[in-house]
Image 1 (cartoon, rainbow, N blue to C red):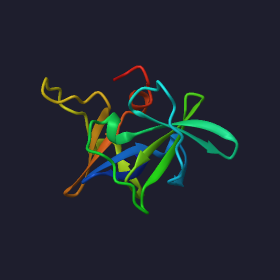
Image 2: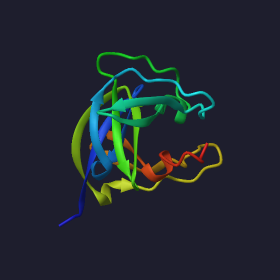
Image 3: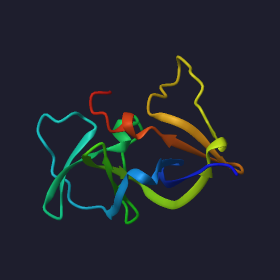
Length: 143
């Protein structure tokens, strides 16, 4: 029997991404984000999550996408990873799904494509999911 992993799938613009559910603490509605002076450009600011102040990554800036349009469907995915709690903005959370590990292909290396944040590409029929390497996405030292 093929090993499966569970993922949270979400959209950024027209593309679908996924992160392993093991590191997702919760998904919250968009809330006021307080900007922090001299923070890296991909840090949108901080939020107060039930008394705990956590930084929030602006995924559009992090992945060099266009400007994020905030809608009723915009969410913040809160991750608990390596004793750090941090949020990341997304346009829309689509679903929780299981994916056989064998259906996730490693990204091809190319000088023209920066794939440092990509763990693999998941295939579900004709649908493709960009599976993110959370350790690199949340590594604030990577630009």
